[in-house]
Image 1 (cartoon, rainbow, N blue to C red):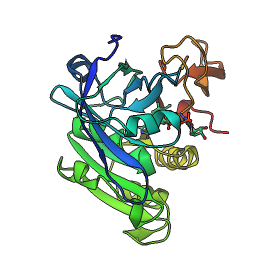
Image 2: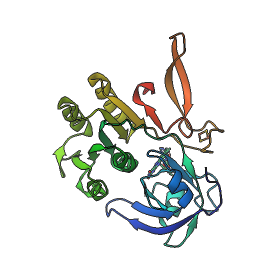
Image 3: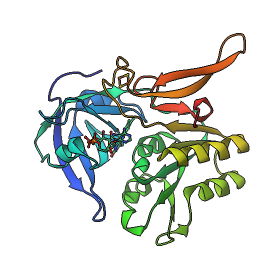
Length: 261
Ligand SMILES: Cc1cc2nc3c(=O)[nH]c(=O)nc-3n(C[C@H](O)[C@H](O)[C@H](O)COP(=O)(O)OP(=O)(O)OC[C@H]3O[C@@H](n4cnc5c(N)ncnc54)[C@H](O)[C@@H]3O)c2cc1C
Ligand code: FES
């Protein structure tokens, strides 16, 4: 794990959507790029006035660089959006566990909104992957070229039908599984969407991994700010509930582990 200060140099930081403050930041950071696995995150220091680092998923690695795609939500991400080519940043990472890839599995990547970004690296790592993405409307559809240029065919659905089908991404998942198009489903997006996709996969008997998002503090397992409720079975077969840390036990979990309510 890399812990140096200012261990990343910004190669570009581009706005990628007119309708929302979405940015694509490419950072040269050879040690993190070399070590990163699909689904892992970096914890980025966002300027002097922000004590806590902010977690952002690694969208993909490109040579010595990591790509982060992010939305401006508050102080930290606004600071990120103001960075320019050549600026230095401090990254902690790669953190977390990442997705599990099994040889020969056909993957369906299921993303909603900014949840599409962490799915690029896992899509690239799978021998065969398709994507089903949901957006609120056509003005928010972005970054499909990143997937298509890596041979990942994308299907789009929007809440209002302004691009692709009208409806929610769960409908694309139901169709894909009914047509036996996937052996594993990787999901990232709003919690309700991930819970619904997890239920569809469980019903269809298809393996499903979800990338959980919780507010984070330390990023290294010490503060317990990021816990989510999970189920476990001990070696006598007795089941119970347990809090797990998204930063070190996740962010990726088998969907059956998560207690969604
Ligand atoms: C594992 C993980 C991976 C992530 N990957 C990405 C990514 O690839 N791209 C991206 O744009 N964002 C990602 N996020 C979310 C990102 O970390 C937050 O948007 C960011 O920390 C907000 O910081 P801020 O200072 O800009 O906003 P703040 O001022 O801290 O908060 C602004 C608003 O956003 C809400 N918020 C902040 N953090 C979270 C959170 N983690 N979950 C839900 N609501 C939150 C706050 O409640 C508040 O309403 C990820 C979060 C996690 C936990
Ligand atoms: S952020 Fe501190 S334990 Fe996860």
